[in-house]
Length: 385
Ligand code: NAD
Image (cartoon, rainbow, N blue to C red; front, top):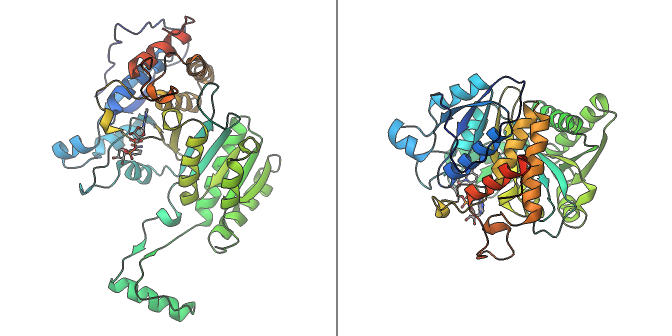
């Protein structure tokens, strides 16, 4: 269902002259506050002058009620056809019987890398204004592989027996177990992705993060393979390693010393949230899940359902994910124009949502769509509206 929604009257759009072809992108609105954020992002992306055609696709709880699955094949087919998608947040209802759509998308499309740039724009409320790091997190392996043994299960007893026989350790009977697989293949491709990101974005250093001193056969393998990839394939990019606890300490004391970080899944998840905290919060934390064939751009935050329909939440995180999408498709000028416009609006501090104001009930906070108006006005060379 291809459609190009008309631009609302409130959008002061002045199309830039373009030579490029139309880009067709799957757009998943999401639910909760997703649709209002998505609308704001659609407007700013179109105002860059890049010709987009949106293949609108719905997924999530409402779709589950109507179609019996929260992630119908049509959504995956659309992303496979177009190669890229932008996505508003989707609620994972507790106890609904369906697993997170975000996890399913990553698996189905083999989106093995999660990219999270954490850049503190001037004007955000942060104690770490020098932060400008990029987190490259492995998405499939590690303790999140979903290989688990439940307390009391027969298979858990067999696993205990197997471990006693092969490794010699007598584990307690009252245990649950999660398995932590780390592969050579998975490590090679995530580390390569981190170096490729560094090279294509003018970044000078890659830091591999691990706990190899304790987990020699998993994190130790991750570190060994990362060192090999660094030495054999990217000898001209600075490379170093950090133990994850030390890294966390250093990130909150001198984040400016770090550039691109590559991490296994669990540490990547935790350090991503630390990164969002360093740069002023979820409202400005963008992300992307990418593989070799497909890329899905989405904010770090969730659907914030308590604010649904209130035109209240910050669309900047998904706008900045839109900047990443523009970079991904080679629209560097448009990406930089949009990023600068967002940065200007943040720096001026007038047309920003409640989360970017000094107090959460600041009456001067604007709504989601007014942030889009202000960003579009900046791109068009006018003052923030
Ligand atoms: P959340 O990120 O939706 O919201 C937590 C709080 O952060 C909100 O109450 C709000 O105060 C603040 N916040 C979040 N986004 C904001 C924004 N754009 N502007 C201003 N403030 C913002 O996290 P949650 O409440 O844990 O999750 C809600 C639902 O979203 C859950 O069902 C969860 O599974 C889902 N989720 C989806 C995604 C995704 O689709 N990628 C990611 C995370 C969570």
